[in-house]
Length: 212
Image 1 (cartoon, rainbow, N blue to C red):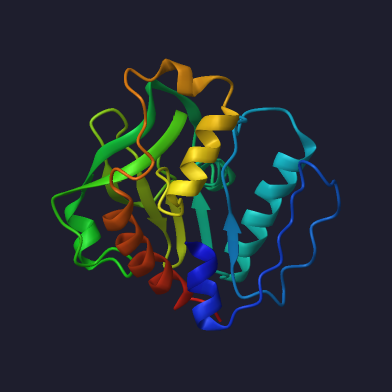
Image 2: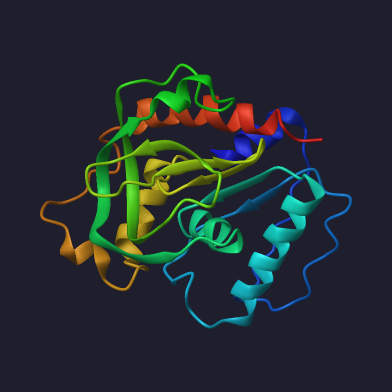
C-alpha cells in the first residue's frame, strides 16, 4: 500500500535490507523521505544494523526529512528519539479495534478519523512516546499505537500497509517466532481488508505529500 502511494507521486524508492545485506547507510542529504519497516526482531536486540537504522533516523530528523516508522520501525523511531521500548502486556496478532485521540482530528495524516477503526496488528512489544510527541491512537491492549514527533516524523505500531496476500503469507511463514500459533481463532486475511485499504490510501498519500 505504501508503494502505491509513492508511485502515484512519482517517487523513486530505494530499498535497503541492512539485516540481510550489510552495507553502509547512504548519505541522506538528497533523499525526500525515510520509511522504516517492521520485522520479527526486537528494537532492543544487539544488532549493528539496528544501530545503523537508528542513526539514519536521527540523521533524517536532524535534517528535517519526513520519517515514517511502522511496527518495529515505529519502535526504532521512538528509541532513536530517546524513548523506551519494552514488552507489551499482551501480544496483538490479527484484527483489532483502534481508537483515535482528539489530537488526531487536526493532524495532517489522520484528520477526519474519529471513533474506532479496525486495523491489522502483529506485535509483542510497545514503546513510550518520545518527549514532546503527539499521541494519535491507542487500542485496548496497547496505549501507544501512533504518534507524531515534530511536524513530519510518524510512528505507527499497527500495519496499514498490508494486503490480504501479505497477511496470508505471514501466517504461512509464521515468521514472527511462532506468534500465529498463539491466536485464539484463525486469522481471516480478508476480514477488514477493504476499509483498511481505503484508510491506507488516505494516510500514505498524505504522508507522501510531506516529501520534498
